[in-house]
Length: 300
Image (cartoon, one colour):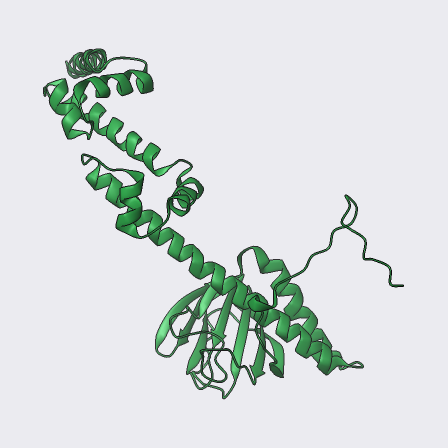
């Protein structure tokens, strides 16, 4: 009788994965190596019939890919697509050292044969939190192909597969982060300019085609607060500015700052600043008068 698999305990955890998130990927190893160049070095543009992946171990400079230039620095990854002209240029005072590997036989769903990234994906991106992992993988792969010990080819191709999968993970995460940034800044700019309107979280989500939980999450991640709290802060700053720089009635200031009525504005203002709008205005006027007197005395 088969023994049942033990359940997780505090000392033992089992981790599984869903096959629907994996890709059928069997790259063929072509070559690998280390490129160390002097400061200011430039490589003549060339192309390959296979995909080449570079890891910038140290230094800085730029790469030219299909006529476009991209800055690179330590920790960056560079992907050269097959049959694409490319070249490397080391900074004058910061020579580049790269670890590289070439792969053939790449087939990813939705992409031409040999392509690792889509045309919309940036060919240069940071390895981010995986920097040490990438460096170790490249170094181990290069060591295996250099020493050519038993089963080196099989080990090299498995390491290459790990590098490619990890690279795809970083690329997807980078794209997701750019999307999150785009949504966040579009909403933030909208709040910065439409604060006087009667905005709601539901209305914002309808305008930007996102869910309330998603919008609240990205605002908390990037701003440290919720969208509606940020809107409240914007309105309060605008009200303080108008109280300080104009003689407008409190009722009109409330309207211009986006508050539904004067009573609500005064209640919120008192709660947030521990003073009333009128008292705040007097205090700022006294401060400005004192500052003006001080400036006048210093100029005598």
